[in-house]
Length: 167
Image 1 (cartoon, rainbow, N blue to C red):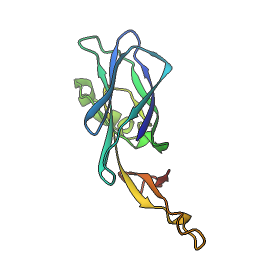
Image 2: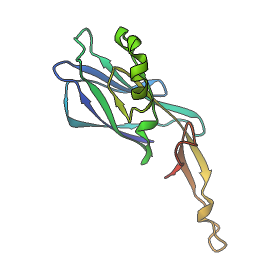
Image 3: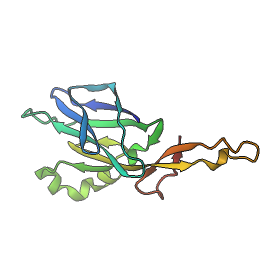
Image 4: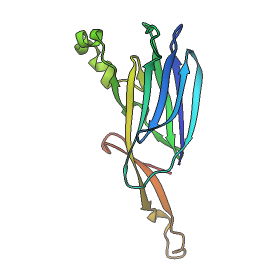
């Protein structure tokens, strides 16, 4: 299955480490120092079992012992699996805990829940989904019974949040 992931990084003056994992396997990693004008496009070909739970994790981390910039972010523009979009705002954002974050937890909770695909602190963004094979019965007719087709669809972890998307 082809995965297309587009993101921008803003990390002026200091390098940040970005990695993408699918089902706990790191399939992309790079050290970036960007001013957010460059869109990074990553294509990953990865097969995995149908009807099982899957996840994509994007990590945004401080590179080695470099200074952490006061203002930085990773903005996830697009995630598609076999041309089916995963909504970037549906991920679970887990920032790396710092003493400042612990002190300001109540002030930042809204930014963590309503992140819009933007990671303003170093940490991880998790997307969970299933690939499900199903019979596409809309293609069946009395005149063309042989026109049966199996399609794969992505089901988000909470089907009440978004409609199911068909290939």
